[in-house]
Amino acid sequence: MSKERAYNFSAGPSMLPLSVIEDAAANLANYQGCGESVMEMSHRSAEFKAILEDAEKNLRDVLNIPDNYKVMFIQGGGTLQFAMVPLNLLRKSGKADYIVTGSWAKKASKEAQKFGDIKIVATSEESTFTYIPEVKKEDFRPDADYVHITLNNTIYGTHYPYVPDTGDIPLVADMSSCILSEEIDVSKYGLIYAGVQKNIAPSGIAIAIMREDLIGFAKESVPTYLDYKIHADNGSTYNTPNCFSIYIAGEVFKWIKSIGGIKELNKINVAKAKKLYDFIDSSDFYKCPVRKEDRSIMNVVFITGNSDLDKKFVAEAKKNNMHNLNGHRSIGGMRASIYNAMPIEGVDALIEFMKKFREENR
Ligand SMILES: Cc1ncc(COP(=O)(O)O)c(C=O)c1O
Image (cartoon, rainbow, N blue to C red):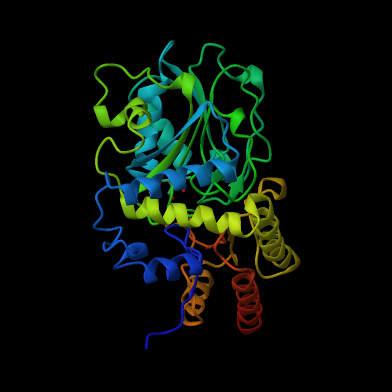
């Protein structure tokens, strides 16, 4: 028998709810007695059609998505969205404004620069992205086709404490590392996208939630697969989708409903994050470099101030069945990603380990 399941603090791919994994395992070879696995199933079959329709319906329910928004499951993860956004939304002036609050936001802006006139209206790069800059409506170019933000910054552990007011300019948000962890008002956004491998499903797709009036502006030269209209018009089955990932996403949406929806889940997430930040802040051994009001409840970064000790922490934590506590390779230190499926017991175990490590290494 292999060792027990670890608490996996990875920033992504990350833990999925155990009940979802176990249920998928029970249905792996013969999905609900239909004689086939979802992995083998035609994406045009009645069985998969039901899976897809249910997944979309449950996502609409949990996020309260208005009827004038399309939901799309698109391959290529979050990164492909960095290109799809400008290719579809640079539709009038060819200008877009980006707020750069981390490496992913920077990558998104760099990709967009291939296609249009991109302005970085604000950045916190000068302080290694430890805070979210304040941006006002007047800071955006009035003729910008859209404004892009990264709502939660996975690597640096920050989250917007506010939603930027962009007036009539559509707001586009990368929510890869916070989607479904908090209630959001979808109607404030023109487009929301998220890679699924943190809070939703196995990697391989992104979910895009897009206001209908913004769909259909891709130029003729845009490759077919990169046109949101193709996905919207074909119900996410223009080509063969990642059926298995969509299936698990649907099961996770049901799991969220079963625990009382995003409101309840958010209460648990806030409690988990508070416990961990309170412990770090009260300790004279660990430090969180992020400005308090901008801290993420999904990705908690911390350091000891000694990079050798940080490495030792990560290695010893792994021996104690707590995996992937290393910070992103670009900044080092530690990062505990405590997404929706991380139980509070995982946070408790981490804090106990942090206390023990502090006593042994101070
Ligand atoms: C905020 C954010 N955006 C985009 C990405 C890239 O996603 P993918 O690996 O699905 O392309 C990540 C990956 O961690 C992320 O955290």
